[in-house]
Image (cartoon, rainbow, N blue to C red; front, side, top):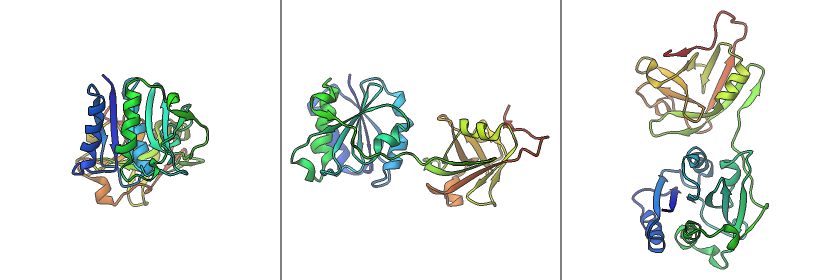
Length: 271
């Protein structure tokens, strides 16, 4: 059975979701349509790409992903099919390819949609049709042309200095936990096992250890963990840290390592 996923900046109350699903199943009755998220902020390409980047690898080869964010098309913003590791990603030329697959190899195809560039519901009129073609086993090269001319954006990376990482929050999850762009490999490479201080947006909120789980600190205390994707995450034990500290995407997260404090080392609580 073909797998087609749907990610959008709609809301569950919108009829758009039902319309697109209805069109797909009317053309491909055996399709398994999976909702990844319909909570992307309007037109937020980076947020949509972050969500897809951190979940696509768990889908089987042949999966078709519809990214219904920034869907209005034009001559300058054509429709793309991005092929990576046997999966297909249908999106507008809004920088998705580089944001989802930074520093990785992938193929990009531009889809000729003729006079349909002015449509108001492209996800229904165009994206769904392309998804059905791919789900039915058609190769993107049969209806699109491979291209190297597309918009390139890259995820914002942390700035690294001697004993210092200046990062930022890139995503707020449904628990109001704040996920940063600082990964475990960078943290360990810069820190070299030295003690550290994590400053959350200001010098007032400080964390000095990495925990294995959220519940290794008392309720109401700040906690830092590396999540399942290896990204530094700031949370509040049993609380909404982003709401309480007014954290948003792009809020600053600074990690300062203290190599002079030789009597301390990186602590993993809960061991």
